[in-house]
Image 1 (tube, one colour):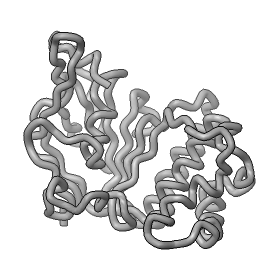
Image 2 (cartoon, one colour; image 1 turned 180 degrees about the vertical axis):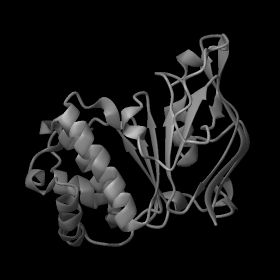
Image 3 (tube, helix red, strand yellow; image 1 turned 90 degrees about the horizontal axis):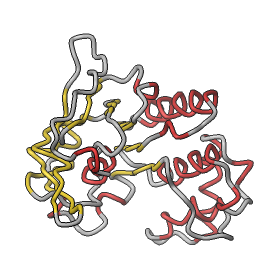
Amino acid sequence: MTLLELQTVSKGLQDGAKEVVVLDGVTVEIGHGDVVGIHGERRSGKSTLLRVMAGIETPDSGSVCFEGQDIERLPRGRLWRRDGVALVRGEWRPTSSDQAVREYVALPLTAGGVTLAEAEVMAGPVLERVGALKWAHLATDRLSMNERLRVELAQALIRGPQLLLVDEPAVLVNPKASRELNVLLREVARELKLALVIASEDVTPLRGVDRAMSLSDGQLHTTDSRKRVVPFPERRGRGSARAS
């Protein structure tokens, strides 16, 4: 059964007086347990595509369905509860200077009636699984980029999503840390039977995915028979390089 389906989705953004086409008739299906990679240059529209998949942004046209239901008709917040979608952002920055990591990871559970104390206990095993338990007492703004990514992953996983969307996991400067994070993403996806979509400017995090695609000029290009990432096509002057 298809978990997430985008049908002819288009999205534009304003760049001053001009509208830039970011997504242009994108159609894609993500099945339960799929591991999908999306390659694209900086500002090619990868982040916009993931936000549309997550229900954070609404497309200008086309439809986005989660488990056969149009997400625009779902109750508010439906995709962000325990059975839905989680988005991990490589460029995440903490908004609070004194919030402890354990509290940050636990907070999503309190929306479901769990007390913060109970949620913080539940956060422990998730933090441990992603290798972040040793930072549980630290304030979020004291974390390194590697630590922030793992904490963001823990907060995504604590809600038990079916689909994990990861935006630019290759932001880490340390190649060893990048490799370890890529292995971790695939391990938790397999263990928890999650569908995983990774969008990256660097092709390294996309190696070994079940399906790879590239995004340019607002369109998704599929892979060849050997499931390699398709070389990034030349832009045709439609302004997609300024998309976010």
